[in-house]
Image (cartoon, rainbow, N blue to C red):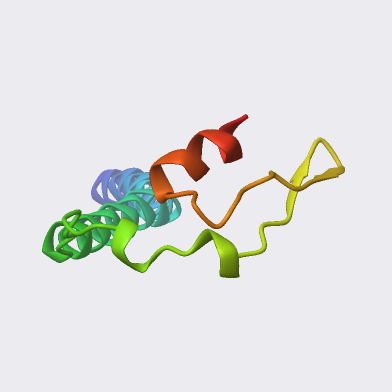
Length: 102
């Protein structure tokens, strides 16, 4: 009788332990998507950074040689109002840019 009672108590203790382990596993499974999503975000940022680093931008060249103010119509919107800067055929890129900025 005492042996049976001892084994029954031990079985109950093991059942409680199994329930605790099961709860722990469920908690870990519920928390797993967070770090997985963060890892995907980091991988995406890493890919984007590598793409940006591999892009070569060449800022050299001159715009003045291909610029013709006489053949260019510029229509701008400033605060919802149409603005058309005045330029002449003699204007260069260097004289037109300040007019656009004004």
